[in-house]
Length: 411
Image (tube, rainbow, N blue to C red; front, top):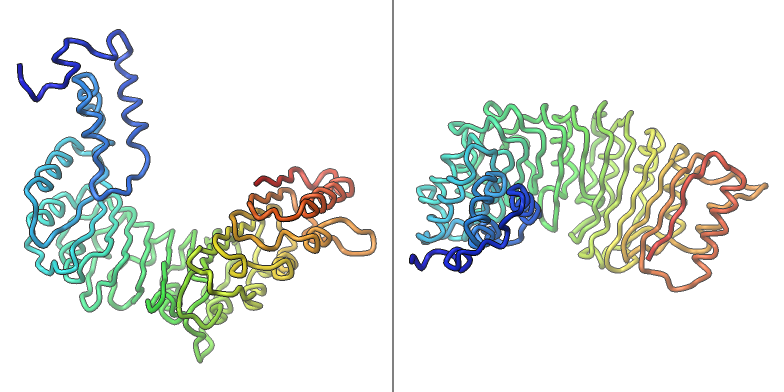
């Protein structure tokens, strides 16, 4: 009997005998539905090795083979190339999510692994270029390739000094994440983008307000925008107004970096008439950055119909807004309906804040239209904070029985 057969097959026993054949397919799809941190996801191969029943189940699901994660080495390994061919064969014609990285020494585009994956460019739905040697960008992103299905593109390294042009053959591209923006060197169809994210870190151009403004001037159709809250700037001139009629979500990230302050020039230039959702994310790497409230951002928010505010903070609390900072933000959002504070670095959940949120006959109530408020944080040092929170919410509920619908605090 062939040694390649599984133990279950050699014993003539199937653990799923008598069970509906759709069950192993459903289980396989569920097991492979979560992202993998490994360069080459081995879960489909492991599941397929259980027995003939499970092998047939995985082969019947091209979707679980459509997540391609490859690392281009200086010296290609035959085994990895062989596995890649299996992956592509079993994925059928299903759209691919391709995640590519490389050794820093790789500079030649005539690589068999690279050639094989580029031959499938017409099936790429998502492309993530992570830590790829600069010269390889010209091989991955070239006007001669077919990107008719590409919907999402991300760079985590700079293509400079190599430029590319893909604006003519990416009709479905809607989502872009870049780390070193340079509008004049990136041949991107900016006007058709709906979701744009700047992921800036120390020393990268995405933390420069002028580079961000140059990009935003080309992306009037955006629906969501993610950008650094602190940047290198501000500019020495008054930028022209940038009108974004469709932008409904703005996410601001606080991370480690060599920064001067909030981008006053960007906040002053933006006109966001339909902005509904605003979020701040304070990363754990920002533990050395003290929070600074931008008055220009407050002016921008006060001009927009914001209804939901989310603040997520990790790491040390000094990087997140204090109770006084949050009050300033809430005062700029009279139409706010939802407030959510999440994470271990929240420091504004104090008795002073809850007193401002409670109803008092002689003081105008803060965020009059607030319907939902939730705090999910482990920074519960004093029980009086919880008691003050409950008292404040109950006073609002009694004064506005038809407005406040839900309040929650969980650790």
